[in-house]
Amino acid sequence: MSHVNMPAVDRVAASRAAVSARRGRASIKADVSNGTRNALDVFLVASIDAESAEASLRVTDFLLSIPALGTKKVGDVMAELSISPRKRLGRLGSRQKEALRSFLEARARQRSEHAAPRVVVLAGPTAVGKGTIVSRILADFPNVHMSVSATTRPPRPGEIDGVNYFFVSAQEFDRLVAEDELLEWAVVHGTQRYGTPRGPVQESLRNGVSVLLEIDIQGARQVKAHMPEARTVFLEPPSWDELCRRLESRGTESAQERVRRLETAREELASRHEFDVRVVNDDVRKAAEQVVDLMGLTKER
Image 1: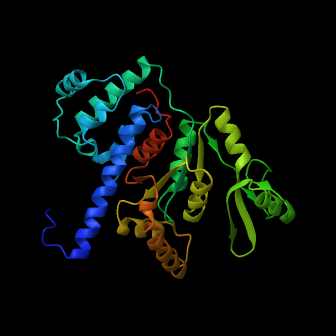
Image 2: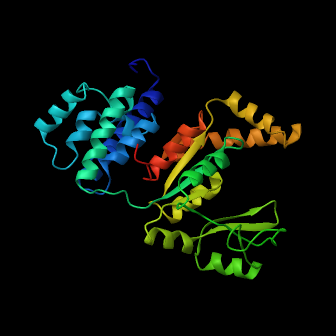
Image 3: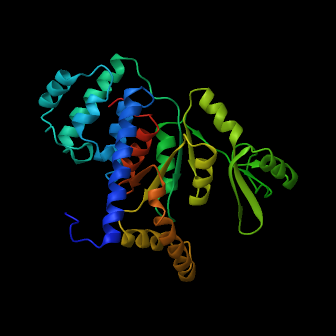
């Protein structure tokens, strides 16, 4: 849509957004070209999140940024996959996506390109299904490291130190904070403190194991500040009405508590654009597979 008749302030905002988008696309292409980012990863983000900078890349420009793919080869690939030169990654049809993905996966295997282990932070509003998605992922990929939080609260019956939580004293928690050994932490219910220890996460990465963190919005912001290379993923509902339905169907909160949680959810949904990638949880299997893709753990299909 043309913005010729937009108010001046809107034209300025649109112009700035366009410049930012161009810079984002240029940065992505440079990362692929110099090998700091895997081409398959760029394609996966574009396929999952239609609002991402990756999705706005023209397929031709994307392919030309891949090392060792010249103009002729790119033209041959586009013709073989029946993709128009003006098509963007986020606008491909399902068959075109499948064909391009197969091409990129085959190329990665031929060149022995393996996805590096990654920290993925999964956050989202209440009742969106984070726990269900995590359970599905861990069932299929038991080797994924699920971060264990440290807490100052005492263990409950049946809880095991180092499995459910790292149970520490207030003084030990103070030390972890002071020595920057926590990727994020917060006071919960105004009493006990919880946090994500940095050590086990870094050890897993050194051992070639990807890490999954399921935390709240504030925690995700802290992790990104401490570990910029971590990928933040916002899990969102297919609609506001569906989120309300899911919360009510749980039957675990009073009407007053549901109202409070939904007010918080509105605020959390407003932060969705702070995240690297957005995943819509309209189907548990599909959403779990997309998070797995973003971790670089895709199973052979």
